[in-house]
Image (tube, rainbow, N blue to C red; front, top):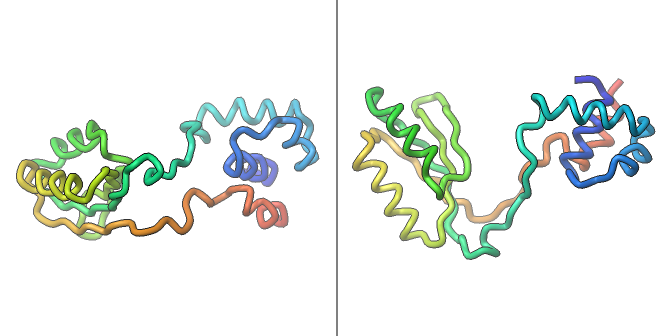
Length: 155
């Protein structure tokens, strides 16, 4: 990625609603160039335009990352189940003794515990580790506006 692209992406990561005019002022890149680059980003670099939500403000106070190791014969079945789960926020295929890392968000700890227990009962979970998220300290900051000065200094 060229430095110009990193700066544009950093601005978008900091505020995806920033106007092209404002981006041009900050970066000194012509608006037409920014427009063309942003169009090209939608075909690969940018997967989704979204908002970062404080789930606790909506009444969802239980949040956890769960590492799961399952029997090989159950892996695809669990994957499909997790992808359909409305409480699933993130899902990753991982290594080092586990198969998946999932982030779940529920209104209560009881709901979360019941769901995690259900996974163990029905999907051949051999090993699990649950990490409850107590407080969010930093999220989605890589290549964000906060980093633009560092990115801009690279030559």
